Image: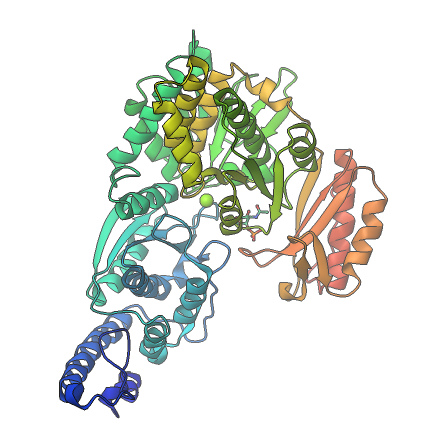
Amino acid sequence: MLRAVYQLYGTSATSACIGCAIASPKESHTEVQPRRQELSAEFTNNRMALFEKVSHYSALHPKPVGLVLQYGTSGFRTNAKQLDHIMYRMGLLAVLRSKKTKATIGVMVTASHNPEEDNGVKLIDPMGEMVTPLWEEYATQLANAEQEGLVTALNDIIEREAVNMSQDASVFIGKDTRPSSERLSQAVLDGVSSLGAHGHDYGLLTTPQLHFMVRCKNTDGSYGNATMEGYYTKLSQAFIQLTKHVPNRTDDQKRLLVDGANGIGALKMREMEPFLQNELQVLLYNDGSQGKLNYLCGADHVKVLQKLPQGVEIAAGDRCCSFDGDADRIVYYFNDSAGKFHLLDGDKIATLISIYLKELLTQAGLDLQVAVVQTAYANGSSTRYLEETMKVTVRCVKTGVKHLHHAAQEFDIGVYFEANGHGTVLFSKAAEGRIKQLALDPNTDDEKKRAACLLENTINLINQTVGDAISDMLLIEAVLAIRDMTVQQWNAIYTDLPNRQLKVKVADRRVIDTTDAERRAVKPAGLQDAIDVLVKKYQMSRAFVRPSGTEDVVRVYAEADTQENADALAHEVSVTVYKLAGGVGEEPKPLH
Ligand SMILES: CC(=O)N[C@H]1[C@@H](OP(=O)(O)O)O[C@H](CO)[C@@H](O)[C@@H]1O
Ligand SMILES: [Mg+2]
């Protein structure tokens, strides 16, 4: 197994020019040559000892021969049985990333809304954002190296990134409540320690909480304290500040039903409750004491099936929300007095928050641009409302939070939400500065000061690193209270176009290629033309297809003037995909 190391370093010690520790052998500075050789030998010995340790421990986390996995839309995600070697290797990669960035890196063990048997892992960069795309590629390379090639693959990354191996490293690790998460996070820790680095294990916490911790650590506490208490204190204080001036909030207004998806979000809501000092009265369902994670409950179930989760006792008009399995997504809903279900998804959340922010900015007299970032899955009515009624800039990007986050960073205030409820708000440094300055300025008039203070507390309430169900929930609750709005009034801002999402199984989903933020298919030939013909048959219609980044399926989305038409269009497009893109199994059947 160690042959690769000897091949790399055995023949010529001076060729080991990695990082800044060793000067290039091509330089001909004769005076320093002996010292350099001495250093090189020591360096080589250290590196070999390190790699021997990596090899030794990696044998305890062996890769199934031939297994190929990809760092997908949201990290690696598959059946938990296939992930032990991936976890170990992500521990190694996190150490390299930490040395490279000279900062703490996060590793989260979770498979979010996937079934309980699955698991996954994602890396968190220094400011709490998703790891940069180039390192996603490294993650895939390292994950797929066969056992005997692991050290070579590791060394390749070290060389390409000129990682200084003598730099200290620090890695934060967290996990969700899946039964496999304990063992898998231990494998991450093994990877971290086999490269001689320090891993801090937070144990159970939500994905966005780990993102928060990483950012706190790397900003020396200016974002908050990197502890659970630090997180709860920061958010609950901001929430209490925001709601304390709202007159006569009734118990009904403070009451919220929360579906915890039988996951980590439920545990953390319980922990947070005392910090909220009864300003929010949470009735927690699917808290994990009985049901299975994500099973017939949680944000994804509610959004995709457009119906209530099991296990929630809802009365007409009750305001409810669902988290997903790692609490980075949230959707709201209610049943009206006729028993009809109404969903308030990521698009409705983005709209509510944008209205609130725009109004405060006007009151504060601050000329800051608010933009909303969506994906092709955003309901057409939301885009129309935002552009035509609210006159905000709307940007459409590819599916996946990293794309939304990136686009949102371009604006003073970027509100981004996927329709499924994953999103947050980003404030540029300049925008934050101007808001804070106005709140402090003794010459600011009362109305402006009030608006600036509300904006300042809003910033503190938002987890700007990534979508966060708890933080988003508190923000929505605060906005509804401040604006004295009911969930019904919020829902009436615009009416969703009926829509349908379907999945089609094909032999190889890579035969589909898309453009225009995934709204048009450029491959296979003829597919887009066929979709265009189908779309023309219906009123107010739109449809697109794209290969999923997290499941082995092609996703179909359609919307139209009525639910029947949306269903029919989605079905017809599914059949077209099946026929033109190599469908497998039975041909899709009509929904009705
Ligand atoms: C239509 C849809 O909801 N797609 C989800 C899903 O991605 P797919 O690439 O569609 O499988 O999982 C992603 C990760 O959680 C999430 O970012 C995305 O929005
Ligand atoms: Mg999630």
